[in-house]
Length: 328
Image (tube, rainbow, N blue to C red; front, side):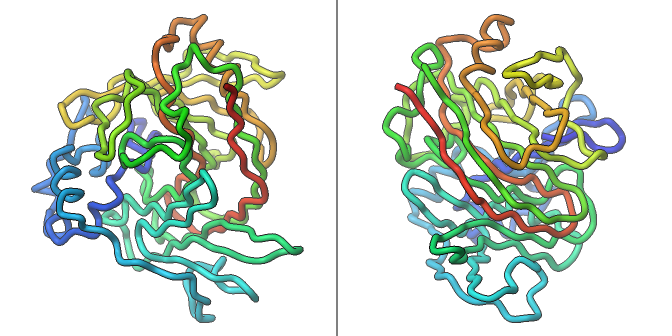
């Protein structure tokens, strides 16, 4: 989530039902058909306003994006990260690469808002005897409500459904002994973007093959890289020091639409410095939030996600190291 230049809250998350964008029915839907959901003057992205009924219809019809394979890019490619010796790419919307429990997804949920010809791809290369995966983008113009969120998904994503990539998820907050993201990225970019890992909290430990955003209770983001012009949605409610880092904690109420006209609460921990490498101790942040009565111990962490929110411009991120650490 980000806030626009006028101060209005706009959705900066990627939440689309990935399969939707390939359906003829959705492609025919206009902004008049997908009626904006507003809370006051706040406008949110189309993806979160899609009814869960659509997910059921699409999945029941077994409509899947076409299978794609990695390919080398022509020298005229508009996304600069594709060009380079030994680099291959997957550029279709929703294209995915699975590496163990981690799903890399070319999430282009906001492509309907594109202000010109754009390109975004997953990347793969061999470097020093090992394989690296990343993503590259080229989105002309600027849209504070975010064009895309190329990402890594771990666990069970309420907006996508499917089998959890780790059988412990959704995992009750009270049962978490250790939950952390250990990561390192190499990013070269211009324009407006951030690096915003996040978790989704749900009210139930149940998962389903179908998307079920109605289970969502809260979204918690961690802003580890950002441009000065970008800020989280809502307002600052605290400045906690956790693991030696003094964060700004932002809060926005009643965000988005889970398909029943109701939203959820969004919390954003904004780092005071750019952190392209390190560890995010999610369990420590959750312990602080429980003490402050911001989340409950009987809620569940459904998914851990990691990606760049892209508001415009060009860039490339290579994931040098990524691991979600979980105990039990």
